[in-house]
Length: 291
Image (tube, rainbow, N blue to C red; front, top):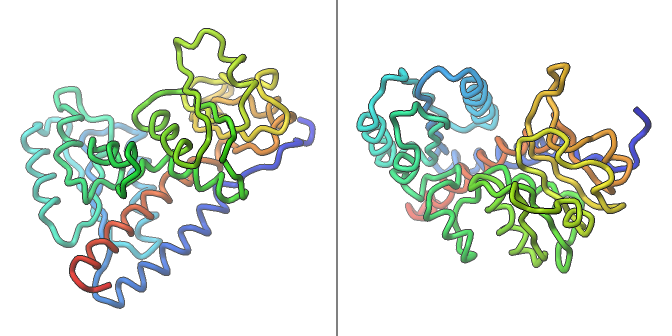
């Protein structure tokens, strides 16, 4: 592979910097008698979920936060899970609640997410969190698009008047990503599987966020020279190696900035979970008069 012309936005380095800040703020809260706490709930034995959960708990511990991992059999009933969520909502030592998705088929994930108190919704998936983002009120931003915004911020990128194209319309990445870009005065186009000419859209873009979970959805001929490309995808190539939605080798010859996979958006997602949990604890401290 030839040397890339694009500057790499290093997610690992930025995540380490932000986690250092989280650790400092956590220490300050502890000094005032409050330890930020995250509860992670895992139902069933999905292998990928187990890895994600382990990484989230480790990141919490490393930053000095209190974390609780609750693991349950796949046979757990919806009512039992809702009861656990309710108990965590009422636990003063827990500031963030994360129910790892996917859940077993017999449990309604939407019902479970809506049962989480918006004040503890550190994943940013609750309808109240989505509404707060929509109207520009304080709330919790979903971790992956929040991490993408931090990456743009880290390169000093001013979105005002820029054209941003988001490929993907999920509630977890695509839609909230578009809202965050809009808040920073970008002109935003959302593309998806029913977009007739994706290339015509991406060639106009100053910023492209690829978040569809499909390899090589974005190739070099689809990118305007100098554009910023953020790759949210997590796929495997033919050799079984981790890769994103973007043809990195080709696109990095054209783009101005690009995020790699792995080592790009991935580490930022868990980092923003820590930031959200810390902010939930700081709000709690302020309410208790500890701030």
